[in-house]
Length: 441
Image 1 (cartoon, rainbow, N blue to C red):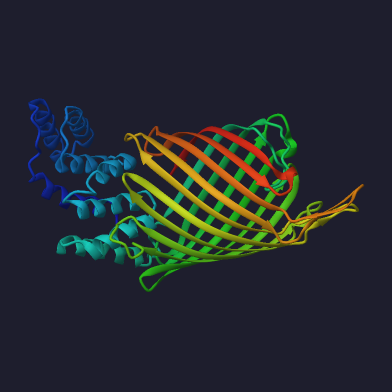
Image 2: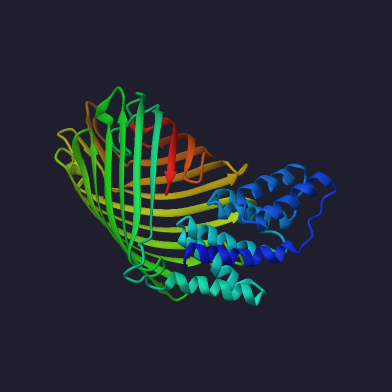
């Protein structure tokens, strides 16, 4: 379905809402609103936005205002602002109409899974035959394979950051250095649809990541990943199989090459009466081949995860439980044996809330329990010390994002971690601070 056709569908809802009277005591607010409607009907959407915002600043707040404001922002390609406006209607009488248009916003923002969740909820719960029909068409369109001459859908992102790490470590879960350093960080990612549709098709994806420390390059990290996935509709949800190949480097030395297979199943709605809920279960198996001098990391990794995405009280929430099991070669010297084969249980919750149309606040909390398969052994003057490594890692992060345009945003993050361990050498406190800019295309 073309963008222009999606826009016409949105306007069907607007015409209905324009018939609802906007209530405000202030004549100035009513005047701004009336001028906004006139500009909207004339196709002057930027002028309509200015008038609607002026009416809102004067105290006007109605479904009519928020809906027209959302559509005007949508027509201008300002998707974050459109989402903010439509979300204000989710608790009112026009909830299903808002859900449908939030689905259109998600489609245009290259978020097909979120769009599917909105359309599925409208189809299942709306009392309006017209809205149910429109939602059904959107779900069907998501499943229609693309023709050979249809332009492939794609999305990409770029992140550029500068930051400070208070406690460096050469490898994940290794011994901390208790040294701090500033760094520059960059990341580029992209996804392209090479066959089929968003719901049933083949996607290729890629990721490049680099963190370079300004004063200590032995901690520099680089990472590259390429993936290919196949998705298809299975019952009420969507299944996906993905194969990926990744390579990481520490300083200039190859660290790990990983071949990974993941299968997952996503269900829109999760059986709840909510448009935005989406559940996902996944299983992962990976083969890890470490580079020279890192042979202890050779082996396998297996994982299982459960995820839930939802919206509540103006927040967008993502929660995840993940279990990882490692079977690595491990590391031994003449006097010491290190287990590199932990099992992890991790619980994570991430939430984002729009404070204004441009400014969003986010928070992340997670806890991870790790238990290593084999006991750590150390020869000391007093004899052999034997103890199993058990870690409890707690982490909290706070993020801010300010939208500079439809594609670009300025970001800030403060991340605090604390790890307690049965082996004191692995106990640490760590803080990472980031300032940067990201683009989404």
